Amino acid sequence: MILILISRFIESIGITSKSSSKLGTYHGEEFQVIKCLYDRCHYFYNVLDIGANNGDWATEFLNLMPRTGSKILAIEPIEKFYSESQVIHDSRVTFLNCGVSLENGTLQMAEIGNGGSAFFGENNSRYIPSNDKYWHSVKTFTGDWLVAREKFLVDFIKIDTDGMDFKIIQSLQETINSLQPIIQFEFSFRFARNANYTLQENIAFLESLGYSVFVIDKYAELKAIKYPRLEVLNHQTKNFWAIPNRSKAQIMQLLTN
Image 1 (spheres, rainbow, N blue to C red):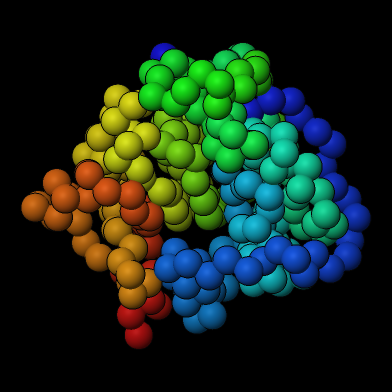
Image 2 (image 1 turned 135 degrees about the vertical axis):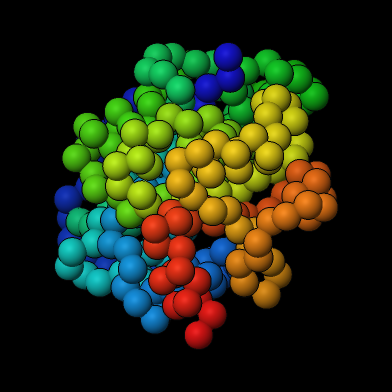
């Protein structure tokens, strides 16, 4: 069974200061949607950042959210990226060098090149030359377990994990059911194919939890997903928003007005 990211827990950062100016320069379409919502209404304060990389997204959130009352739990499996994120000294963010999976345990992870990407299981890295892969063991934890351990009341989840989005979302089912956060995830056809799941399966699972799923287009707008659009998207790499149905009308009004 293909699981997901990461290794051991590290102590969280408790130093209060400004974030590093060398990060926080990402402005893709998905962040523009976030900024649009946040500019019109401070809709969320607690962000779960899975696939945190070197902290670039965490820095964007830190720059966006207020100095008090906001928190970020940032999770990154690759040691190189986790180490780079330590230049960010802000008491609002906790970085964990660990991973999210369908169960707590240990998993073989392959880092590609110089820490560029991470893959779990032979099926998801079988096309990569052996001399380009660095295999090592990592500890994994369910998303629900991590959230409970950190006592983290998440209201926005960002997932960017090279095709492991579906497994991560499944591992957060209890959290999603109880807290109903907005979920942003990247779907990659190549990685999803290797992980043996489809965009349709991911969307159907989210809909079963009371969500509606939208694709983020190049104009930073949320677009409904219907056939044949779904079939086309299943062969692309795109970012998506899953919005709880109970909040959908309010959020869509904020984004479109």
